[in-house]
Image 1 (cartoon, rainbow, N blue to C red):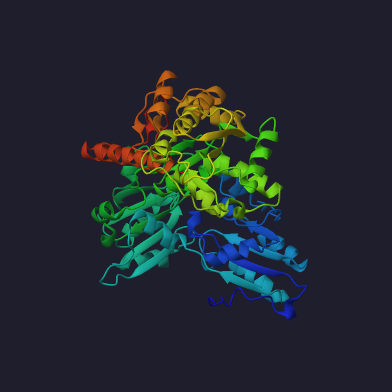
Image 2 (image 1 turned 135 degrees about the horizontal axis):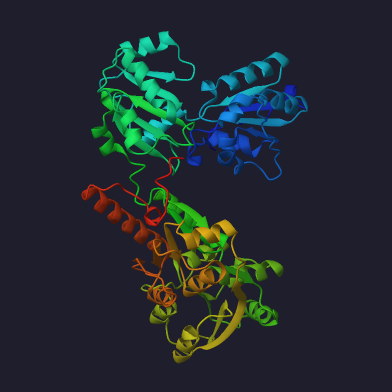
Length: 556
């Protein structure tokens, strides 16, 4: 039995009927930086009170129906400047806790470094409301780590943290006199002023400086400069003036955070598809693992269903076939898609059957995802193509019917209504009888929202992954043709041919008919593109930034 965390034990009887508050650090922005304890607390929350910038980071871990009251902005000056100051959180927290509810109060970074959270904790203590604190990754630590800027080295550099919004002359004098690393929390348009304060306090103008905005997210960007040159770097790069100037940044100052080090240690922004918006035209169920893989390359996947799966118009044929599985009618069943597995599984559940009904029947599967869906169902495939993951690949390995060794000569083939006849014809040629059954229908999905359609046609996406000919036809049909700056990646020659027939230039072709190999091939394309830009001394840009009228690289 695994050890139990002291924070996850049941609530004491003394607190029964009382509210409880969890002050939770949501980290700098990357949802993957939430702690296990944070996820546990969110799952048990009745009320989730979160700052707007972290609400989407934490909401996905809360249960359905959790209450998420909005924080009201009461500081009119801050509202006019576009910087909301949230003053009523304590009232929302206390009201919910007094009502006996489990409250999670989520803040950016770590609660221990949030002054408002400290005041809310004192309010709970004053009324005897039990609370706990779940630490998070502090912005001043997490952002430099993602920017490739270590704060200490083997010599044990002194590290000082400064909030430029509240720092006084004494604070600037102390960090100016130090030769340690200084981590400054400020805004984009206030970086130069903070650099000036440090120079005035004694720091040399040639002291290296890195400035990171939107840290730990795929919108992150970092600039290298010195205290004396940062204003000019921003001006030359047209970073400022900008309507985004109020956005928070983390600046790291010190000789040991030199740009030369960062060039070697920038692991996050150097990912092959960093910041790329990649369109994944698949169903939600099919897109999940592919989207996770794309995120690991630094991409921002955008899932657009192009195909909807519906039951067959006449279910009787499918019902007879499933009953035939139980009565011993078949020697083999062959699954060519995840949807075929899903259709049979749903029929099994309808009849109260489970994976034991496959006893004595050989099972074949095309594709790693199909095989994984069967394993999830409790069925281990007996045959998966050793070569190409396709109907042709399956036929290469399929044994011919042998009346001596095969007591039954029939194969059950559940498939889509638009499937090709290749597999059926091949099995018949090998001597098998085939029950070719429509297990599900594929129909064109509804068009995506207008902004997505505009992004597709206007070059707002950096790449599109096409996983079948039908995804090409359906995407063009429901949303229009992708812009010519968009990188087109296809899973195989047939899909590529369909894309070219629709006037698309195919840039990436998967070496194998696998969605994961396709994503891998796109990442390799992105890496080569990045390396070519660096070798030529050009800035690394995304494909969408090449289109006419494209805005300069976003800083938020």
